[in-house]
Image (cartoon, rainbow, N blue to C red):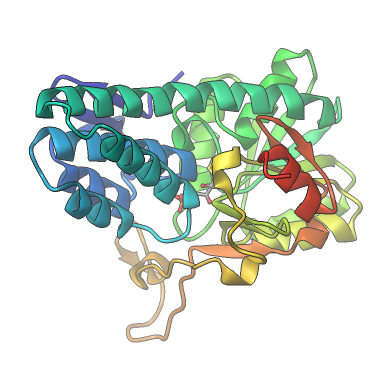
Length: 337
Ligand code: MRU
């Protein structure tokens, strides 16, 4: 399986997700600023993966003698929606402050070990999510997914795609429909690529075909990832997820969200409070640098949308499956009850 991110003696090495699937190129970030740049430019993307990247960025920054607050502020300013980023930075910052009195070298070693641990834990978490989610996947049917919530969006194995992998490993005969996911094409470029690499039968569709197939009876369930989940179970994920969820409910197709506990933001009572990243207009007006719209056209480009909890059949986490009422089930899984 592909290595999304690695700590090496030369720096943090990431597969460049802006170049896939045409080129497999690796980028080495030697400073925390380079890690921040990789997150902003989406060389690395996906909620858990940017959490791991940020943790490694903190470790790089502190080892180079930078002020921890400056390092954390820079990394936190990269992308606003995925809460895993802030979760990882907080974890690193708390550890740093617990190490008062230790030598600079010992602090740097401990932070490096913690960043590596966050990565290893993420893979274990995804496998656990797979074990909890696999029984929900109907055998002999197609699973529809949106964006990329796979190995590339995590430290490995994936959240939504991890559940699909686990269902297949459990012997289920399923295939995948991948929404292309305009405008950044994570579905066409990344999900289609990583599933094909694994030999998982995959069909690429454009986003506006989802309703056609959800109505056809062929789709057994939808499984997506998440960038932030509010206490009431409202889910922020890649823009277009909401439309898929509404279409799924309309057609009686279960809609599952697979996300680690670190994607929960229990400080927010509803999804309306989740900050939504707005990205560059050129992502909409151009395809690979080629203009597809008239010059000076007004453009909106929200990168995420919020799916209200009433469209969510269940949320699959590493600690089990949460169902409505989510206020209660999510708090219980998070150990806050
Ligand atoms: O803008 P991106 O590519 O970072 O958005 C990614 C998503 O929306 C994923 O579905 C989400 O982060 C879950 S990844 C396991």
